[in-house]
Length: 578
Image (tube, rainbow, N blue to C red; front, top):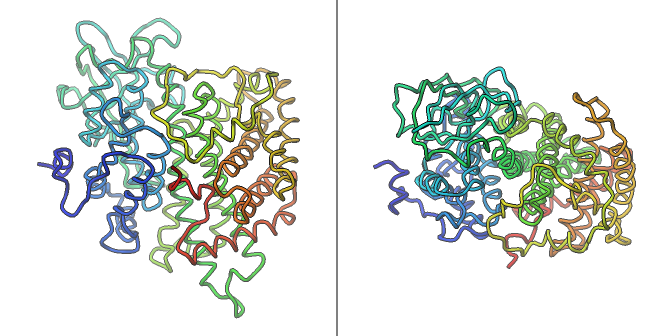
């Protein structure tokens, strides 16, 4: 009996306490305790072991088995199908904790949610079949992309002939877990007619298919997540039963696009894990490194650099949280919100790594030095996140497509209601996927709420940059309304989309802060002011020198928290909220 099978039968692996029956926010702490201290050799994921596997480009099979034995896969299956998935932010936080130790492991394990989510949207008997696979700890991959076809899913060449059964021919590449996965949800062409209704989704369970009709393309040598199984699957007339369709025939592309509205926010948890690692390394380095007879943290320029990077990480955290809240409270807006979230978080964390690399210095490129050995791995790994589920260009293009909705006049936003949607004590069941839409009617309520959120800050120090960003949003909305409709968007349209995303980030940060139990406290003021002034700098509304004092104050707060073995966070109080 394999470790995974043992876990499913309640036996578990030796020394592993399985997940709590209910996977709610306290289970995040239980998962972190299970993972252990990465500085300890005996931890489920130790830094030493992580680097060793990465250097060898080896798949972390033993670690994935241990995570399966704990039961993280239960967090990918909605409660209605026998799993523990309710509030999507719970598995996001677990993936974040996993990625904070090794992003490769998080990518390898979390991909199953991406491969399975279409079944939760489609519903019907296939959802129950998918749940059995996932709960058994069997990896499910998502077979969307094909060699030479980029991100254009409408150009899919893999074909599936539907008769008494389904016969599939084609190749999917590059796909995460294509070789190791037991099953793949395959996007295939089921009609010769042009248009989006020509594509369907099919669940291919390799254990129920003639192995002679399957072959594998070799693992791709990647710059980041070196040990991940990024490979390909070729199907040559592979036959599956006619009940293996995920959704109705011709609805494959629609289900994929709706699935992406949920998977995009989830993948940002990978970036947050990488950011957590980088901030911990940089904070420890600043506290312990001495120059000219004093600590690095005592130098004003160094404090400002560290604080700026932490402000970026806090922005990413608030935007990730907004993505989860939007899925539950405003699913009809997720076509835009998911694109805003997926562009802004990996891009911001990449920027943070670029700033911290010279700050940490040569140690950022070395292994086993002063606790910074995995910094370069985390930096490399995060670059891959921006590619998952639509790269930055794809997501900016989606924002551009929503310019008319963003610019459309609408009723005033209930700003108090927006803050209530961000409440830390919210308890949500699984997303109402019937409310997902391919386009929005009025853009994003969170984005539109920015002026009102700035007003709610009153006389707080954070109000000044908030109002400047809100005024900039007013200008951007006008520009979006007059932007030309282009088959190939111009550089100006991409710049406009990026600036709108930054304004969305400001709204997310303010709403998260105001919903926090700490709203208005001294730490809250330091965090929010630094984040908003950093955004004002990125928007060109403020000089970086003018933002240095707030960045320095944030660095000091982070160093104080580090002394108490805590990380500075916009989500303080979330784990304890009832």
